[in-house]
Length: 85
Image 1 (tube, rainbow, N blue to C red):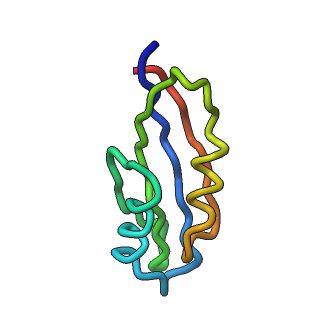
Image 2: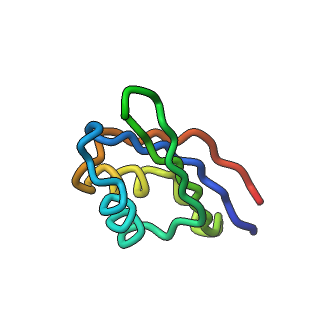
Image 3: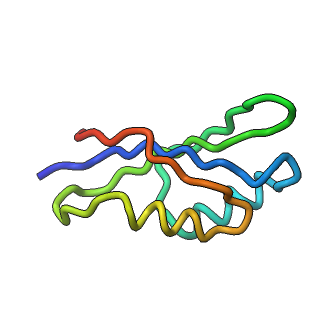
């Protein structure tokens, strides 16, 4: 068994969301390997997260999506990719 890298796109509720506060809240709930701010345009940004965890449990990504969706300021969560590392 190895590890799985999960790429996740987190869309904010709008340009008024405090990204620094949002990043801190996300890090409290999920162990994030890497986090980047990406600007879409018109001041709207999203976060791209890289989460690494063991594939031994056989879990999917539903728990991560549900946890991130519960954070205030998050509009939607989209898993962009999953790969073994």
